[in-house]
Length: 331
Image (cartoon, rainbow, N blue to C red):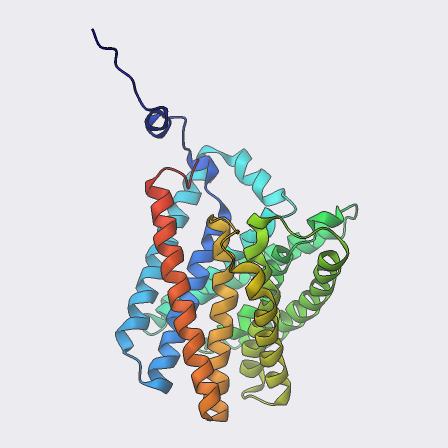
C-alpha cells in the first residue's frame, strides 16, 4: 500500500500556531501614511497638472480602508496579546513606529476633509493628542540615559516628524487654538528632528552600517526636511527662500540614500513601507514648489517623483498582499 506524504510547508501554513495576530508589526501603519500622502499628491496634481480627480480620491478611499483594517487587527492584537504590544512599544527601535499611527490620523483628516469637515476635525484633534503623547513618551524614554548607541536608527525621527505633520494638516481646521498648537508642534518637531538627525548620522558614520533589512528606513532621513518644508510654508502662509532650502536639502538626501535602499540585495518585508511617507512628503513638496516657481524643469521633476512614488507604492501593496496570502506576514 502506497504511503501518503504531506508537504511540510502546507502543514505549517494550515497549522493554527503557524501564524498569529501577535506578530502583526505596528510599522504596517506606514502604509496608511504613504497611501494618504500619495492621495494628497494626486489631489495637488489634479489642481496644478490637470490629473484626473478620481485617482487621488480612489487612493484616499483605499487608505481609509487600509487604516480601518489595520486598526481592527492591531486592536485585536492588543486585546489578545497585550504583553506583545507592550514589548513592541518599549522596544528602542520598533517603539518609534507607533508614531505612524498618529501621522496616519493626521493625514486621514485631510483625506476625509472634503466629505465630512466635522469628522476631519475629530480625527485631526485625536491625531494631535496622540502625537504629543507619543512624542513626550519617546523623548522621556531617551532622556533616561543608558541607551545603546547601536539603537540610534532613522526610526527615532518618526515620533518627532509626527509633530511637524500637525501644521502640515491643519489648513482646514477652524478651531481658534489651532495657530498656537501649530507653533508648539513646529517648535518641538524642528528642534528634536535636527538633534536626532545629527545623532543618527553620527551613528551611521562611526559605527557598522544598518542591517540589510533596515536599509529602507534610511529614506526617513529626508523626512524632517520635506515635512519641514510643508509645515513651514503652511505656518508662514507662503514659500520663501528658507522653505526652498528645506526642499532642496530633502531632494539631496533622497538622491544620497536612494542608491543604498533600492537594491536587489535588500530583502522585502513590511519594513519597506518606511520609504512611503518620506517619498510622499517629498512629492507633495515638489508639487507645491513647482507651482510656486512655475518653471518647466521643476514641473518635470515633480511629475517624475509622483510617477516614481505611485509605482513604488503599487509594488509595495502587491507584495504585501502576496506575503499576507502566503501566510508570511504574521509568521
